[in-house]
Image 1 (cartoon, rainbow, N blue to C red):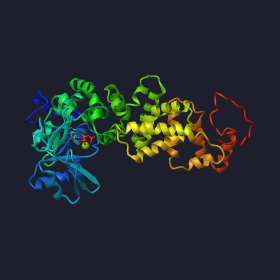
Image 2: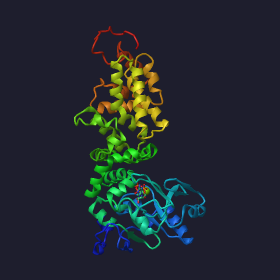
Image 3: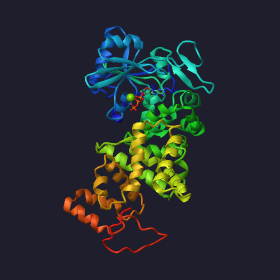
Image 4: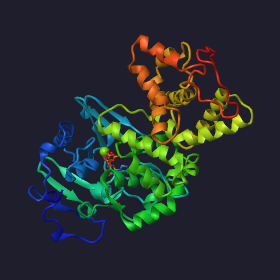
Length: 451
Ligand code: ATP
Ligand code: MG
């Protein structure tokens, strides 16, 4: 990484908000025009041909300086969304709070954002604030300097011009890359009040990049974490995906808890995690370890599985309470699931295409122990079987004793027809169900009673 930051410290400035950028010409930084995706390079070129300014900006520049592979490329321009759209065959204006253009080039999608001003009050043009200082709409356009100062972190305010291979650092982002720290541009409290989601972004970048959060920025997060409660649940669902399904879920989870942000996202789960040695914490950590591992090895991950895991501790607790009150297990589970999900969607809007599979994964936890007769054959054919089985393995991995249920299902899936039948026969009379503690009964071998 250091090789990418040659010689800029000689004119290092002390303020993170600058009007004049540090300019690094070719040779003073190690980004090459060829590092920029074809789509982003095309977007910049087309905009410039039409007389607009355009730069590659944000996370992709940051990631290239850190020798990481950018997830996608963003372009910033002085062209308005209405001016950008007609220049490209496949372009769409999206967003209301924050209007941007999605330009599709080949299989790539480039986000094109118009330079925005950092305004301090409702200006009657494109900005709107809530009483708490939250920006409800942010469509006041400005110049590149203003655009740089309204960005969230210093390391995200780096602009690169592929045409002349020049890098512009407006907020001392290179210094902070060097120091491996995340620092808000401007006053942290004001900036987090404007948009509390920036606190989640701070944690996400710190986890992904292994950066420290600079002390003033960190203090403001501790103080303002509860403001996340004001964010619409639909936006938090999008953030949830980025936080937990980007390959650094465990590190992100630990930081979220450290800063008091996790409780705002999962208020029902947090109280279960307080016991350092408890099952719930091990279980959630293990779920995140497995998810990170799957992402690293390019395996599919579904938000439903992870959400099912994150909400399992409160669902289990509620189910047990209902059972203790006399509800039969499936009904208790169904009611518990309904209750926990309905509270959760008040924080994070979980689309039904995920909440339904979550319920099925939980239901399978009751059904997978019951393997007698034709049940095993039926269960293994269910579309949600694999997720339910993985969930059993996860519970066992986290230390729950399920009488080797996971191992049984592993063998069953590997077995041929004959062996499968033998396995079911070997379960004996109770169908593999865990023996009840209160009324232990010895059943004769071969008893075919089903449950
Ligand atoms: P990645 O794409 O790797 O998650 P990124 O930094 O590119 O990281 P994006 O969400 O793609 O993040 O945003 C692109 C850029 O837009 C950011 O680098 C930042 O400069 C700016 N930005 C995004 N969200 C905000 C926000 N809530 N407040 C201020 N600036 C933001
Ligand atoms: Mg990006």
